[in-house]
Image (cartoon, rainbow over the protein chains, first blue to last red):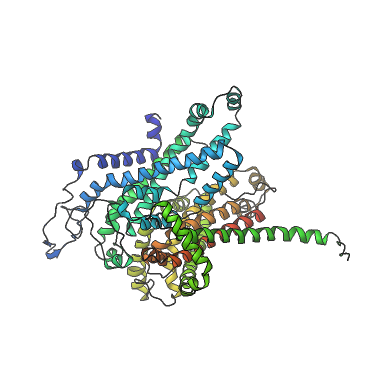
Length: 299
Length: 307
């Protein structure tokens, strides 16, 4: 990937810029956040000539407004970037491991094992990811922490990787150089390292970026339903109907919980975290499309 | 006793017509039974217990459920059925929106290079990127502050109510639930329509003087229809995934919201029936779409796989 390739592909340059920006903010939130996430402003303030209580709308001091506990939303979003991106990346790693493992079985192994792995992959591809993740995390309990989220979100959505590896292996198996390698006795792992991985990278990198976007989308939707990392108990629909449950934890999903009817009044409460999610999803989708345009132009 | 002899291959043609139908029906029933069985067994798994203990109790509970099916089913079947059909209304409407708008947007994006084509492509792109709850909130604001204000009518429900939904109340949730199907179907339609428009037979048809409309209907659409049918299956999956969110936002008493409540309050039998009903719906639609795809595929037999 040369620099002129990146510059000549607008989706890639924009996606890369936004993605890198998010990663930098995730790594060094204290450098960019205007306030400490636990900083609370005054409880009663005069805004536009009117005395108001929190949450305060966006103004020059708090660019995205404050939450009900008078914290700056922008600062909380910046401090929550790391956790949110880490969960999404972890989910992609789990999906990658399961998907490629099954893909390896489907592509290289005995017919019965291949058929069985194929059936499992097809079956999981038909499970609605959000429903599955929500049921699994709720049933185990979100107090189980990071691993529960990785399992809930990572146990579906991996069939794409199985399909991808299987397609590539089938394509490669028709190539004469692979037949020659097989004939001279190159072991499967050697073929994986020498032939398959170099062929897989141009297809896998764009898919990786887009899977990251899909994981973020799931996290956002789960957060809105009251299931998010860092909160010990599941929030019931009744609690959500009553309003925003405040959680002392910086996580984009958590900031979305219970904000359904806030859209009519304190609109910045749902829109600020939604905007952060949208920006992150957009950046990784653009990155994926840009990478595909360069690495796999025939697709 | 001797059977009747075939007259001019009449029996033969009847046999060839009925054989795929029987095969599709058998496949449909077998898949629905399998999915219902699996979802029911899975519903009894207590995921917060150690694995072996969870499986042991799940098998025991499932056997008790299977042997006393009628007494378990009686109290929940009525509520589950009413939740299910309310969701079915939404899902069918969402797929209708997805097919109607998605195919139109896709064909516009494929055939027009002007601003209209760009807007069509952007709309489908936005549908893929926007989280369903954000879209639901924006649509809710539009229906309450915009349409509701101007028409004086209540277009959406804020809190769930048990009564029958007004027909106009279907519009907002169906549009939200249909957004991702619209985007997906539009992208599939546009990609395959572009391929078909570049193909040799379309060039030949153009050279023979056929108008754009007749080319689109007679030559492009038959090749686009099969992938679009495949996209219907994926779109249904998207819609089912977003069902709890849309029903929660629009106060719609459906299977998604009921599942939400059943899992939280540990009503295992209710959750099992709801999951089985949703799973069976997906399998039924997928099987029918698969069969329909094979029937309408213009390519020679063997090349009509729906992906």
